[in-house]
Length: 156
Image (cartoon, rainbow, N blue to C red; front, side, top):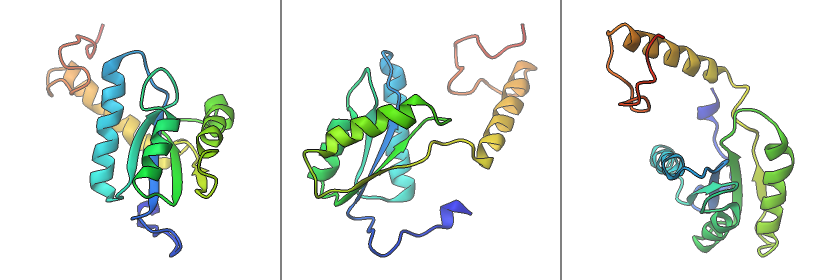
């Protein structure tokens, strides 16, 4: 299982900075949710240096996230795109923004990871979401946090 992987000895959780990057949104609520997710991820996986970043439309940007990681003592930075599939942002935009951010710190290597999909656990997440929403639509479950008071989760 992937979560059982251990970092090679040359990479220490104390000095490996993790930046989880989403697209960014003009909606403050969307950006806030991403930033909360990153805090929860850090708590669960116990890396010391973890920063949220948005590719565009919002701060913190990839550049400011990179700067924050270095300021916190990162000697290597891992940039994890919170995107489902490979596309232009993963192929072109995030690597370009990362290269620009790293230019001020040539001694700090970085890596842009693969996006989330395809990953077998995404199928489980889709199945769980479908089951829960259908259960709510027939009155067997309360609305989830995302749909709460939106009126979206119902059969039409």
